[in-house]
Image (tube, rainbow, N blue to C red; front, top):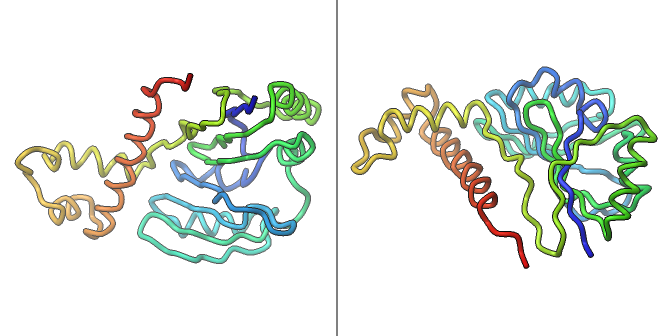
Length: 219
């Protein structure tokens, strides 16, 4: 029976410990990709009020050799990362236990990993391998079966939260609408495009968490 586990782990035991200690409400996601060769997680999505500053923090990490921005948005960047040095204790434990990481998102200073195992025994083995390396995992959810819910780690960034709250208070979601997108963007001090992106991403995160939390477990 395939088992999915959503766990929380401190950045110092996984990745980007220095960055996430000072990055506030930034959201960093490892882009899932089929590994070719020995390269690990070459792409990151960084969502923050100031993604350039967070990108610079990532580049300064001792485990990072180089960071190349590929797509620059107002509050979200896609970057390619070249890692260096030994792998973290968590990654070593996952590799030794033959676990698969299908999602990894850092929000509010914590990594949330969705892991796939072939059995509960394999999950237990991985957990004990982490303990042997003095790594403390907090298991938030265990789900059996082929179907996979995404982890409940789509927390809003501070920019998304501000945009949604301002839009709600201003009547942007009212019928009829009481403020235009341009007027809302002016209140937020950003461009129309940035305002639209923040609203869309924020609503997407809220809806995903709400709908997945209410969905019944598969039989």
